[in-house]
Structure formats: C-alpha cells, structure tokens
Image 1 (cartoon, rainbow, N blue to C red):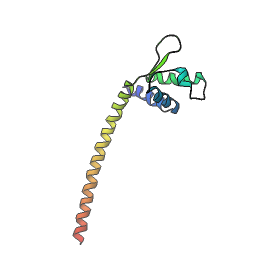
Image 2: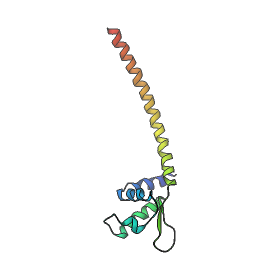
Image 3: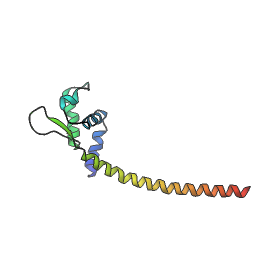
Image 4: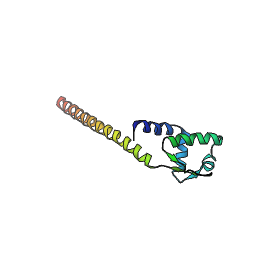
Length: 117
C-alpha cells in the first residue's frame, strides 16, 4: 500500500461517523438508506461520507440503479495491518533492548547493595 493511499485510509477513518459506518458494514453489506438510519444528517451528508470511504478504497458500491449495497473492502485492513505490524515489530525490538539494559542496571544495583552490607 503506497504512503498516499495509506494516508487516505487513515484520514477517512479519522472521522467517527465513517468509523461507525465501517463497523456496521463489517456485519454485512447495507444500502445507503440503511447506513443513514441512525444518523441525524441528510442523505447528502451520508453520501459525502461514503465518497470519502470509497476514495480511500474502504468501500465499494456496484454500478447500477438504486438501491445499491455498500460493500466493505476488507483487504484494505489487511494492508493496513501489515504496515502497522512492521512498525510494531520495530518498537517491540527497541523495548526488548531497553528491558535488557534495565535488567542489567537492576542486577548491578543489587550487587552494589549487597557489597555495602
């Protein structure tokens, strides 16, 4: 996933309404009207949110007459997870090195403490 497309995905998910739509679509496809039901906004505003999700590649709607089901594209989350895991691995290796240094420091302090007794 390119940095630009990844930025679009994270930007799209930054909005709580869009995150809620994604969460609801994780349970299955839905029409725009079904997605719009719980929100106190116009249908036009719902379409704007969906356009952002579509441009980020998170959802698709097949061409054709209304009503069309909105579908969650789960492979986008797989690519996001790969990106996140790469950085999680780096962070875990740094924390492991820090743990080793702290353990060495604790052991040194314990030896010094015993030497004073």
